Length: 316
Length: 247
Image 1 (cartoon, each protein chain N blue to C red):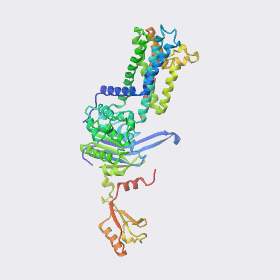
Image 2 (image 1 turned 30 degrees about the vertical axis):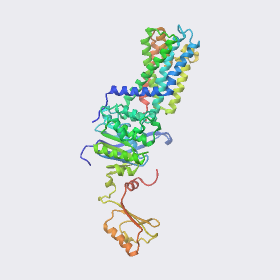
Image 3 (image 1 turned 45 degrees about the vertical axis):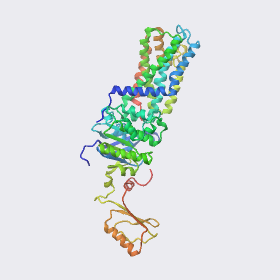
Image 4 (image 1 turned 30 degrees about the horizontal axis):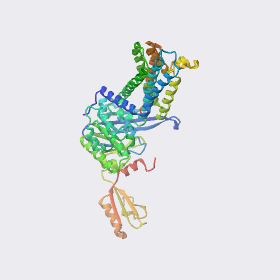
């Protein structure tokens, strides 16, 4: 944890929606105890499957919704119905963009910039995010990626200290993604507290300093990417895979503490916090049984595995 | 550290932005300018309003101005706000320094600006047709106009903030046509069937039409009309504050 005080503190957030007519007028609990802290100079990622409560958490943190219980402190204030001064220090990129379809990108950006006393230079930001090439095209005619970049520019134009990005990489082509990710890293270096949601583990692994995994409206685990992919003692999990002849007899002695299995015919895998001695035991079995694998790979366990272990593998 | 632009500047900017958006929208212009102009010409060419004032144009113009208020404040603003809500524009702008109050005040200002444009166009056309309003009625007329605009803006926001945008489109257009024909706005209640008179008289459309006719034809201040409009403005505003959904 950094030494500076957090820009955002969310404690025990609970939020019900409804009544929902398709559920006989029952209320649906969308948030059921979300905890979250975000620090300046860090990218904090909220990771979760669809419906885990990421967007609702952000909207409570932005003051767009009021939680039923729990507290939100954004730059030390309650953001719900906060004044213009707090709003001027916080930039928001909504999941659906929130951009008027008939507006022209550059005109809209200038309009939003004028709401601030000291905005970022519009021309510079527009050129950085490649908006000049579609500056006067009606927003309804833009591609998803063009809209995303404009929404990001609109969130940034006020020179905020805290930046909320709801699914920032949705709809981005690889070039735009690189531009946007580089910019996010640069803003982090400038000291912004950046809070983003994503269901793409790759995004979190590439960008996030700290990850909160949400499931069914709860913060189920949190930590740095390195800590989440390590075990309790801090050892890093490894995924080891090798290809060899199918249906090998797997002796228990080969990998005593781990379950070596044949996932598909000829594809063998085992995961855990291995020691060099474990690898040596594996190699001894290969030697004794006369097995020469056609390929061997070993990688750190991915955030994806952590995520799937926690939120389950079934589609919901 | 970033700070917000002053409140007045934010509201002025938003008002200008929304007014330009409305004036650039073709369908809005039909509703705000073309149809009222057409109505004015029809009423000058036909004998519907004969006997209400010294000339047909004197009898018709106050009601046409009232119709303009309904076009802009209720139907135009309602539809625009409904779709802004659908596209998340209301939510996004409420996170900027503009905020929710600035957004609403900006919309109200846009209504005033577009209304001013309509008054210039309709006033010029009517003058060319011989319209001579009673000078003593200009101030009372302005008062009725402002209260009427507030009432219809609040009603438009109430519809836009509670229904889906497609429903808002249908409802505000339908009410515009119904009230324009039988709401006592262009044709005063005295010309409508007795059976619907008690309902028509308490409508904001009839109150605004009557208030403007009293002012601009007779130079009088219609207190009953003013009170009815005030009641509609207050009740609709309270309802909008209570039920308006931002998302």
